[in-house]
Length: 109
Length: 114
Image (cartoon, rainbow over all chains, first blue to last red; front, side):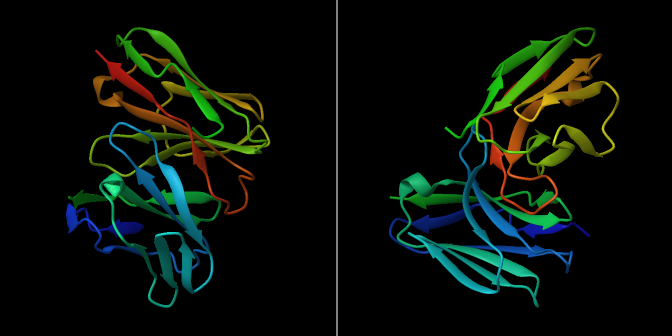
């Protein structure tokens, strides 16, 4: 079983819509959860982190965590063409981060 | 750009060459990491250094040799690589390697082994 699983996509959404990205993880002891954005040919850029159950909002981004279900999600509101990228979910295991394979999002104008 | 730099940005090397990748972080962090990113695969953790001490060697072949002379610098020495080692090599840093802090990535080195 993969440690961190994401839908590979591509996820295509119209401009202005909400993009919803999902991630599940296998280690019930994980405490920290991160979302990175990676543009083609670039390195991952941290956009959100969440440690507690519930929602955390930062601008157009909302991270949601449900530890009981071992599930973390990222919502992108008012999606813009500049949000087109691959989004990586990362989960801590001890002192290491385990990454999912990423979900590619395309925002169409 | 984050406060993590990597050189070179692109590298082409033959299988018999020896080369080194360099990473420098300007964030005052205590932990540094090497990752390998191949096409369509998740990021693979290679090495972790915390306060200049290696705390993780994730079953990486010996043709990859890391070096961390201080908390700001990290090297990855390469020798007798194989074509399947061609990938994007990413360096990252975090405030502490033994806590679950966020990691910040450098721009990466695109390595091609011919």
